[in-house]
Amino acid sequence: MGMLARGRKKIFGERITLPLSEEMLVDIDRKLGEGEARLSFLREAIQRELDRRSMDAASYYVSAALSDLVHGNVFFKLEFRNRDTVLFEFQDYRKSGEEAISAVLERGTEFGVDAVIVTGTMPGAINRKDEEDARPYVAARTYVHCEGGFQPLREFPVNHVSWADVEHAFAMARRARERKVPNATTVAAMEEARAIRASGKSISGTEDEVIQ
Image (cartoon, rainbow, N blue to C red; front, side, top):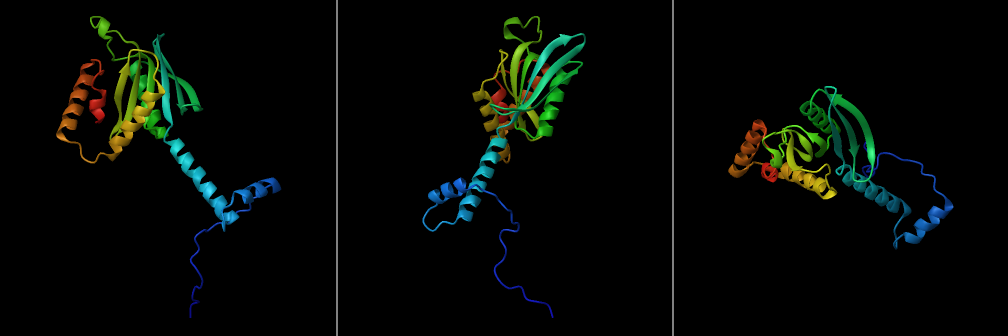
């Protein structure tokens, strides 16, 4: 005959030994509320730190700087970072700017980020002040992760992206995840953006329409 399990169901399945200094214990005791146990205090502190780090993880992105074409190659430096800290970086090269950007976006997918920032000599972008030559020019572009991969969001005729623009990319990615079914206006805007990219024209002015 099987034994019947008695007592309450175990909530915390693991135990750890946590050495603390006497000074830390005294400080904890001073901060405890009436009737609050040290263990509850520590569990809540750990949970708050876990929540904070989860929020921080969502603020990481990939940033890459492209070079001009040098001896038949485009070099790029890639960083996996947040606003203040670079966690990982490396340098690589491809035969063209388009291939370099594709490699950067692939790394963005591998890292699982919502935003990719590319700066430098930007292929496929046309300086409106020099449209007749249609030469690549130094610019900055933000990409945002949507269903199906990264999409270009904004383009700037400067070799820099502000933190506010990075946060905007994060917000647009969250909006894209929350959107269930695109409406007719969104579908039309996405098709228009694809046509513009296919034609090689500047995507400036259509970026937000792609995501909204």
